[in-house]
Image (spheres, rainbow, N blue to C red):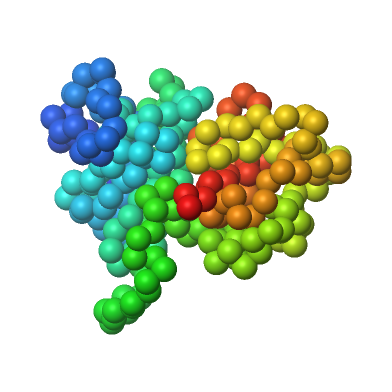
Amino acid sequence: MQSRIRFLILGAALLATTAPIRAQDTPPRTSSARRIGRILGVFDESGVPIDGADVVDRIGRGTARTQRSGLIGMAEFLSQHDSSVVTIKKIGFADTTILVMVGPADTIPTQVFLRHVTALDGFTIEARETEHLPFYLKDFEERLHDAKAFGAKTLTPAEMRKNDGRRLYELMLDKGFGQATPHCGRYGIFINGVLFQPDPKTIIPGSAGIPDDFYAEQFDAVVFYPNAIMPMEFRTTGAGCGALVLYRRNK
């Protein structure tokens, strides 16, 4: 363990001259490109550094890539409350999402070990319904992968279309969430990533803040995060004790 930490510290000199690769639609930060920030090291299960792993900034939506040493500096990653959420991707390994503290006092290098997954033979799938998948639903697909790992509740586009005409609250109850409890009286509702404040007069009695005028045909997909696994990006003022993420249908 100590040898790996020393390895990370030695790699800082290399990172000092290299800025992370950012997504084109992410505005540049004003801080110096030479600032490193906390060092993240990406390794396989045997401790070998992983070169070329994509480190996706889940808050800022940018992407950086590890060097041959498996290292990346986190100065350019956006944060909330001194913490960043990143998803690490590399072909042959399971996608891994972690929260990394990046405050001024967080200077000790941190490590993540990716798990090998079995590579399957390539094959082609023809699926007309998904050929023109709306861009915003790509975000849902990423969250669907994480939901299986962390236990979030989901309603997929196929489930939503089978239930057109039903109230969204009824579908949520079928999935085992949506009711107010002594520990959680109201969810934060996010429509296409934006916090939504419903009219109190429309709230269904006994629900966790769900409006009675929300119907399945209005939305393409749903993700619900209980408070214990709520991503940092949804922990905003007025977010409530759970995050109900809705993707409005683009008819």
